[in-house]
Length: 269
Image (cartoon, rainbow, N blue to C red):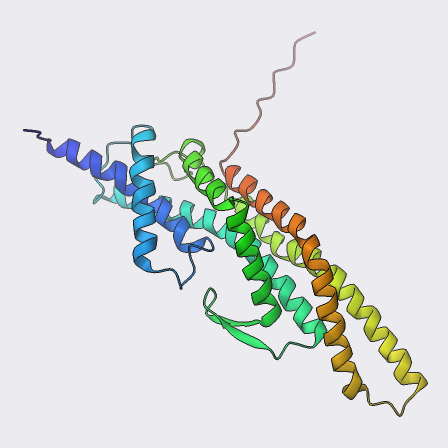
């Protein structure tokens, strides 16, 4: 008969609970797993399966009661780390959504909005299309496998400990937020430039022929040019989106705080 002491049972629960918390924090935020359309049971089962695989491979944890103050602090730290990793993936999709919003507003489709279950708000139709394409690329390029690989590797770069610093760089997380605007402008700039030229041409045409109704011909032309440019540039969006996903995975892997370089002492003359 197999028997466990109280301390061994607590250590087994802690070695499973703390990795599970980090994994569930990532699954709750990172698209497409964090989407509200994904059932909660599926998220929980995926997190438990990953935790069962990861828990035996990580380093021995500090002997701490999960119900003590130290154990609760470790639990909150793992939740923050997991949510931060999921947030870095969410930033990439937010940049793609921003590109769709900019394109839709420039085309004149700002009124065509739909309910977005991910953000629980309104988003434009172009933004929804780009997010769906990005989600398909996310799964086709096996980025979700790279994400799980980076998550498992994070237990070595950011080990579970009782330290308040926890080997995690919040500065890198804050700087990564600028990628929303960088990705959004890179994807939308060709279409916005074409629509800008179209609007300039319409302005010159209206100036030359004032009897033309700008509102009658302007919106159909800008919407038509927008859809034409979107269909022409869609194949070329694969590489920028793939690079954005790759940068996101590299950013997740570099979340650990790198130790400062030691400066050798000067030799005396």
